[in-house]
Image (tube, rainbow, N blue to C red; front, side):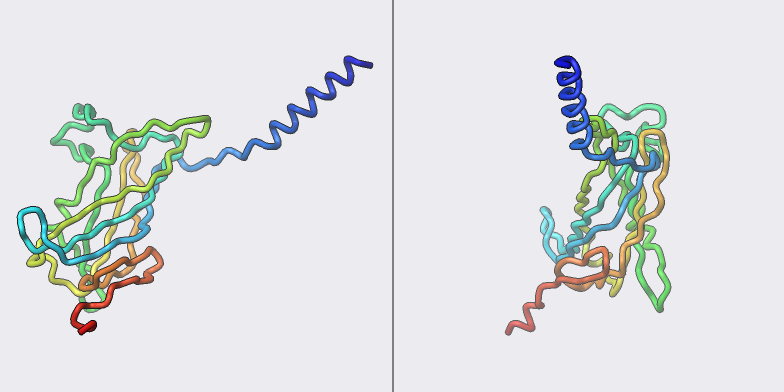
Amino acid sequence: MKKHRILFLYLTVLVSILCSCGKLETYSELPSVEFVSVYLADTVDALGNDVKLQNLNLEVIDGDGNLGLNSEDTVNSFAPDSEYYNNLFIRLFQKTNGNYIELEQLSKNLKYRVPYKAPIGQNKYLKAEVKIKIEIPLGYFDYDTVRYEIFVYDRDLNKSEIATSCDIPAHGHGTVFANGECSFFQDEEEDN
């Protein structure tokens, strides 16, 4: 009888432990990227040039946790002359008469290497916030409305779906969120 009580106690503890453990989150092995927000401001860069600052916030998820590149990943598929040397790509579009036209000269420079971070724990997925700082000289950024298209590659060269931002009023100063909601500062002229 005593053995049954001890066995029952062990089973109760085991069931309690199993029930208290959260369900494992699972995601696709294909990476995904999502536009979260962008902060816009007219400012001056380190060289004294007038620029449009764009702090772009993204969320990336990869189900098998193999998104990102180490600094030593520079051979074969990740060689500097390879299309996969960078793993995050942003295309910038201007809106003209309801149509989106890619700003190819600007887009060709919007390539980045998201660093690799090994997943910790039993969930092997990677879910991270990525922040990109873009500075474009004001002379090259004379548009009323823009939007971004963003995609990533994982280490297996799987490409994510293309994430598209909302329309962004390019002359504003402040933050535009994924749902298109704007939180802008008042122009200084309005304060006077």
